[in-house]
Image (cartoon, rainbow, N blue to C red; front, side, top):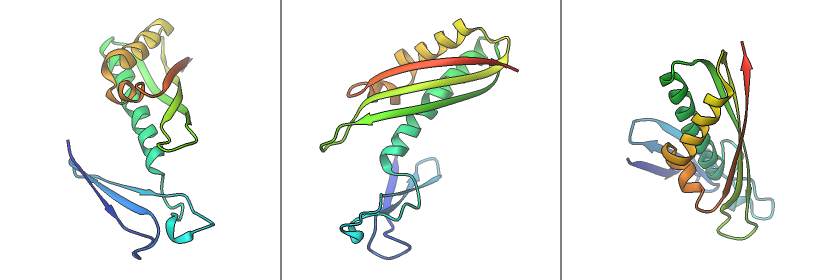
Length: 149
């Protein structure tokens, strides 16, 4: 796996904290920093997600992918899966994640809660590389609900 991240500055200037990542699979991802009122040249313009938000979103995508795939392989009629993530970070550098809660909402027809619970556990214990990696610094908790369509 590879990725190249280029500093773009702010709208083509060499101030600001905008970045474009080009992934090995040929996709691009834009990131930006938070504005800094004290030193505007050191801050972003709030034009894109922060890098740490992107990391959190990646973990959500990784585990949602696993949950849907596991449910589909179990021949469950899953129609949707949403993961809402909430994270806490340390106050001092490096500001690593210390706690992450992932709340899954799975929709479908006749999807048993036990199957969803098992899929989430399998993702977090075995398949989701992002969750396992983030679990080295953060306490990860999960919850879920199943909505019948």
